[in-house]
Amino acid sequence: FGDYEGGAGLNFARNALKKGGVFVDSGANIGQWLLYLGAIPGVELLAFEPVMSQRLWLKECLKGQTGWRCKVLQWGLGSKECNVDIQLDGARSTLRRDWYADNALATEEIAIRRLDDILDEQGIECVQLWKLDVEGAEYDALLGASQALNSHRIKNLFFECHPTNYEK
Image (cartoon, rainbow, N blue to C red; front, side, top):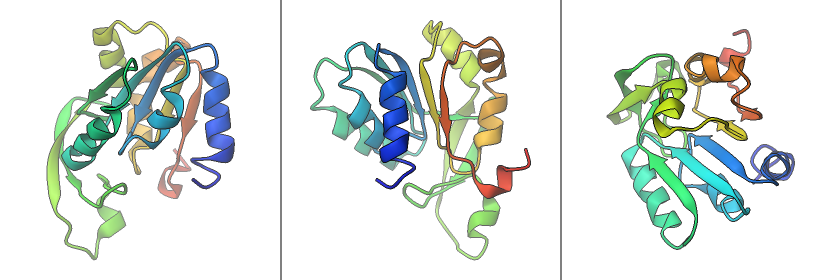
């Protein structure tokens, strides 16, 4: 891991979760963060990975972690419920059409949900840490969590922001 995913990022995450709590990993990919943080006592994992190949790999990685409280969810996060086609490029799969304008990548239909709705459905009152890394769709994911953010239901947020979203 570089500075983003290792060092400072994981130290921030470990500190936020030192007393346990819910860790929401959106854009969980194959579980790099989950495998580092899932063993912390009292941590409950909620992993979002909408791309089937990545989600299957994630589930395989988690098989050996007995006693962990982890739910792997198949949705992407956004501002409204819908189905969209995601361009497939491994860990860099994205909804952003401008990122790969010159490439003909395969696509997969995924379901998008609002984090506010999912937290309600799952009965989660407090998220200790939300890692938001959804390859260019961060702004829409934040909009879909506006109630949880405004009510301070989400205590800590660690996110990657693509330059195209800086202004937003």
